[in-house]
Amino acid sequence: MATHTPKKILIVEDEADIAQLVKLYLEKDGFRTTVATTGAEGLKQIKSDRPDMVILDLMLPEMDGLEICKKIRTTPDTALLPVLMLTAKAEESDTIIGLELGADDYVTKPFSPKVLVTRVKALFRRLERTEDPKQTSYAYGSLRVDLSRHEALLDGKEVSLTAKEFGLLEQLLHHPGRVLTRDVLLNTVWGYDYYGTTRTVDVHIRRLKLKIPLLDEAIISVKSLGYKLSDHIPVK
Ligand code: CA
Image 1 (spheres, protein in one colour):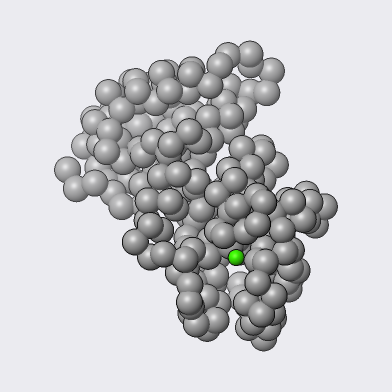
Image 2 (cartoon, rainbow, N blue to C red):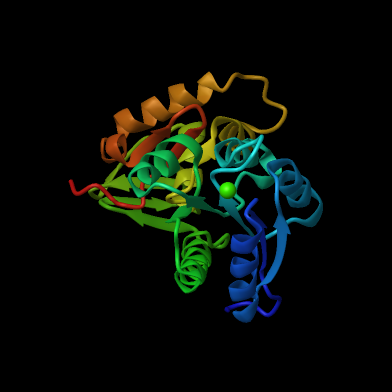
């Protein structure tokens, strides 16, 4: 692992044997872990104990994984908490993960614990690589964005953006592949004291797509939650 402090992972899983197996393999690899057997307990631990990642089982009694993930994403404090979902059916996973709830990755049951640990490490690496807070310029396909110069170039030509459009673009480029809820975007781009509605975000996203056609495909609307910038840059 890249950092000195071992990363802390919360496992939310009602099947005790699976939870223990996952815990064992993660700890063998140097991670710290805690286990919650219900969604309510998981959310409580997230609040009090702030893990670095959550491994979340989709099928849980009472509150299921979808609902928990939605709660994580819509709470400003935890909106960007990495979530790896454990799902039962491979064929449903792409849709569920990508378009409905905003998990960052998923592993289909039954899984090999070794494979799960590999995926956990890969997710940490991906997030560390793409979410560098000191980064001031971005390249996304034929789009170049320079934050310090407040400049966006598409195919080498400057695109004229308003401050809010530029702010939205910055947030999306800073968190590629991650779901950003309308509330989170509203708070980071407009500020906490702004009293507009989340529809404001939709309007500005639409304008951004009109000004930068590359983003029309690349900014994905995530059902009832918000938006994400695709990891896969459209070839244009
Ligand atoms: Ca379960």
